[in-house]
Image (cartoon, rainbow, N blue to C red; front, side, top):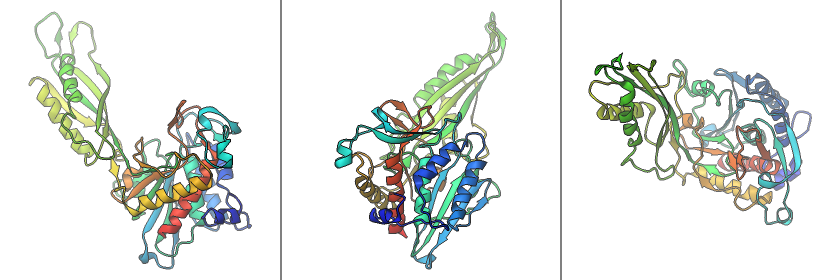
Length: 418
């Protein structure tokens, strides 16, 4: 994979440093996983900027720490503006880098059909925080950007610093924060996340809010007061029936509303005046955060007694919530990425079920901020495998061969689109 001739044979371009050495996505990933970014992403940002500089690519640090680099073709108006995006921050705690060239079990995955795949009961994996979420995808996107030489349109690499927190960088980058403007204005987006080399065209949104119920305090011995905790039974009934009769999205299925925390009362001998229910909302298009809040307030108010006050609010945050997004599975971006992923998976003798599928993504991502522009989520690795959680877990890992295949896949897709 690090040999330019081998890269060309797999259908990708070549990425050569100023000193003549090629870019190796696996070596980059190893260094990236060794670089903690769970509390502060500055060291990872520096690694990305220094890597780009070694290929004579100028990168700007903008919008609260985003790294942006651009390759403009000789005919920028003759083709689309394609943006490659992922993030450099990780969740806590940091998990140290480890390379295991003989991993077995769920980490080995299935077997391919070729000479190597037929005997593959072991796999070469990189473990550590960020291995799949999302430094493995970053390595693949970085390879594709460096290898690209567009004939038309524009290619932008946009790396964000705080996706695991509030996504303030991404929100500012595309003009979703007050006083900011869209610095990308791209036509197409490929967002790097662990998808098992499938092309994900949609994802549910995630909102968090609270249902505050207010009554009147009184001594528990008296038939007086308005019991806010008792009213929670009615509010929960409204929450549980909120989606009855709602439409099922063709890609994402039904929305989901879950009460997650309930608090109320302050003394065991007092009629409680207050109760609060925290809710988690997984939305589908076209629901917006504001639309959800208003609809839930109406539903709860209808179910609860007239003397109980109802206040439904979204959790206060500076950046917008991730709303659901959906890209037409028949769009050229989807078919191009899926074809490139399938070809790359075959070239690297990955199992038939790895690479080229088209499906929704299982988690909310910054892809939400880029829609309604056609957007797909793609990358090596998995959110979970047969043994349990992978991303965000102590056993986070990615298979080396998938990182290589993902790099070639994105490079092929970029070449086809630009």
